[in-house]
Amino acid sequence: MENLLKSTSLVQRAYWLVRLRWVAIGMLAIATFVADRFMSIELASSALLTLAALLLVYNFVLYDLLRYWTWGDKEPSERRIGWVLTFQISADLVILTAIVHFSGGIENPFSFFFVFHMILVSVLRSKWQSYLQATSAVILFGGVVTLEGLGVLPHYDLVGFAAHGLYAKPIFVFGFLFVFTVTLYLVVYMTTSISEQLRVQQDGYARANALLEEKDQLKNQYVLRLTHDIKGHLAAIQSCLEIVINGMVGPLTDKQTDMVDRAHRRTVKCMAFITALLKLTRMKLTGQLEMERFSLKNCVFNALAAVQTGARNKSIEVTHAIDSSVDEIPGEAVLIEETLTNLLFNAVKYTPEGGKVSMTVAEEGAFICVTIVDTGIGIPDEALPHVFEEFYRATNARATERDGTGLGLAFAKQVVERHGGQIQVQKNPEIGTTFTFTLPKTLAASLA
Image 1 (tube, one colour):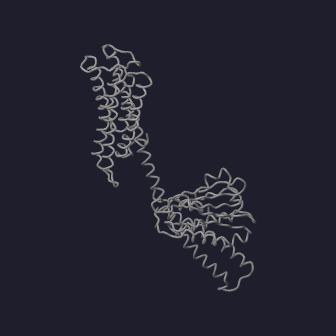
Image 2: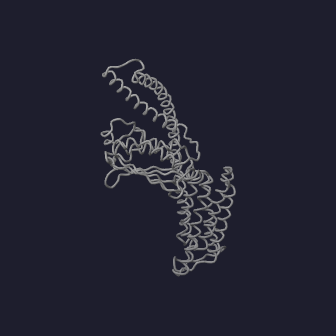
Image 3: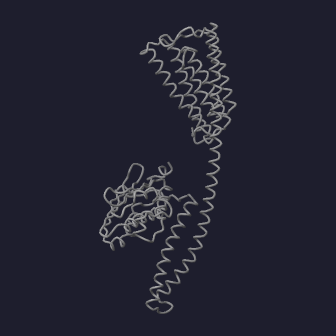
């Protein structure tokens, strides 16, 4: 239902009707063949199969026409597509009437397929057009039934399936047409009412979503300005502390040196947090990347080199395996390298001494797959759905490492997804965690 409401373009609705008609053509041909060959039901098979063939040609013509009008991302006028939709619906109504006429008329229970037609019209078109189609259905079907009863049109009995002669009984015909008419108008009334309510709700959701996006933009702009100002002040404080630590303003006592070192370390961590927040906010605000081809292999080697000292200090074995075919891909090299470094740094930080961290980079179809496996503390089950959220840190991560921004994985997710890839995390069967993310090998794949 969602794909047929107001937000869907008229072109999409027209294509949807064409696809639905392929199914109807197949069902008509199969039902005619099965009823005739296997169920001993006498049908006007040649007439029904001719209608299926005409429907097939008619659908091909409509499909080609829509393709021609929308070729090269062209957007035809709403008036033109609206006319095509109305034509399709009206033509389908005439063809449905002909099918019912050649397959028993009023004696065929499938005559209530008109109800499905009314539901489609009520969803796809306006209220007045829906009632107009319902009136047309009553006139067409009622006219055919009346002409059959008067002997003007031949009646095709469903021998072997339904009772005969009902079409010639005025009381039955009148009662059937009365129920048929009331049913169609009630269906149109209920469907259009529900569709209008859904459209109103959808409009409300769209407005609310637009308002939320606007507020999110305002929040990001505020955070950007605020963090930028804070970063400037922290940079000044850090510079002053470094001057004092380096003894450029005179010697310090041991106690003074200890206090200044503590202040400097806290300032450095705060600067790291502010820098990560700035990068994440800028990325969310701009939503754009300057895509240039770069060597992913070089980024991997740089990231591995950046964590070697920390791994060596904890006696952690860091290994890697890179497919020889992996080389240049489109994207922003700095962001990808920082993402790789963040993931490797986390793996080393949360892996106990003597553990292992491994990275594999391999081709998988149109993508490059990067996998980082560690033998660290792992991630609790309840934390797995939240690890990529901003400022979130799992309980065991907070217990192991008090200092942390909770932005590294959020940053990684933003970078990977904006490059057209996906990132996932899972617990290892025995111990540790596995992070996996993909990056498109070509610009076309990243935009797909």
